[in-house]
Length: 162
Image (cartoon, rainbow, N blue to C red):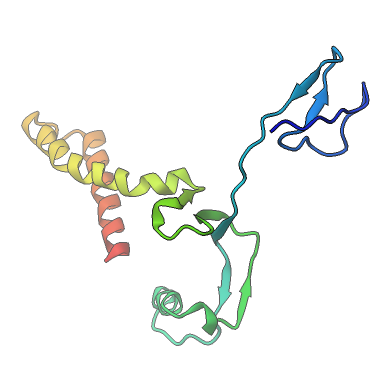
């Protein structure tokens, strides 16, 4: 449905035009904006935040961090937004009975690629090792360094996820 409405010539509207509204164009003609069907959504935003857990007793700083990370957020003495980065959002259309109208929106494309990159590195490492071995590049420090770094990244990722 088209709804007429005209802004005074040469004047900007005080707010953006709404769907279905008509604006006067520079030529004096009336331009219609198509009306859009708007939906209502429930949105869960996953955001970085800082949690404070005082008095963690541990042998090392890493152990203390791991113990605190395993605690529920409600156990934190303080919870600060700290302008944390928005990581993702789970968005669902209100009234939808199934998950067909639910979407996970990723705000960090690099983080989303990390699992795929790790898989590619893990698949490539044996191939690269074989190329170095068969081409007698074992003495090539650049090739050796590249292989060691790939192996190190894979090992670090598996330690974190284990």
